[in-house]
Image 1 (spheres, rainbow, N blue to C red):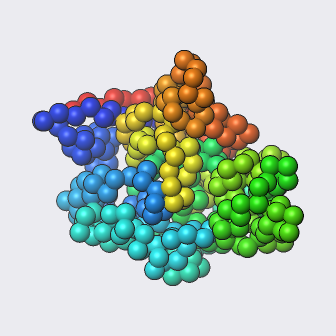
Image 2: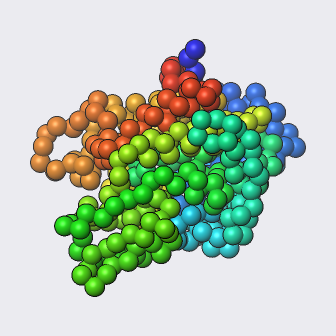
Length: 373
């Protein structure tokens, strides 16, 4: 079985701009086949940590919102609170962050609802009885919605290799307790010979699990550590490292199972923006130079096929010479090479998609249908 992934590039002109191309894309991809009239329609999105500028443009989101409203839907933008310290760890600050980054009703045409409530504890437990998760703690507003539409910024990720549709759904829709379950087997270590005692890991550890001691070496309290991977991403000296014991692969499989719980018995549709493909997640309050040039926008009813297609497009693209994984001197553009494995070499990101296919979430086999103007 092969799924269709619809794609449009970023060429525009005076007759057809990118917002019009986006609307044309989702229409050609079949979004009109969904019954959305008078349905609570959750648009799952990452609002971006303030300071990070690689999140999806609110203008794109407004286009989808207006299209749905014209069809009688009751749309709302949503995300769940984060497990780590930042401006999105509670509903008050999360709303403020969303508005700061332009996701206000004035711009997008619909409200923001933080899906797991004020403190991240408002969720519905959905039975799964799968290999890794017997149940899934899905944020209440998402679990209570009638229709799910995911809008994903496709980029690298320090835990799962890349952050695509499944990451947006599985991790992004989990309550705080769910996120802890998804992260709980990844425990980092500190390579003492690399540690400079800069304390950046202390600053970003939500659990207070890392402390720089008198010898200026960071040490982890494993009684407190939840394995969220934030210290690994923020460390500039390769001192905070993952223990590559299958934890990343396990997290990818758990995310696939949580994604299945999110979409269970709900009409769903997915759009992925392959723009500003940064090396790491939008959860940071900064974004590094992109790995590749902007590619375009893709859409599908199959989240697995969509992630596979987007990953393959990034793989086929030439590496930008000033990106993190380029030495700035070589003429090799690494076309056809896996940019995410080059960025996070010890992560086998395929495992999540393989497991998603195994549990019936979708297929990795796809056909790209190019949508023009």
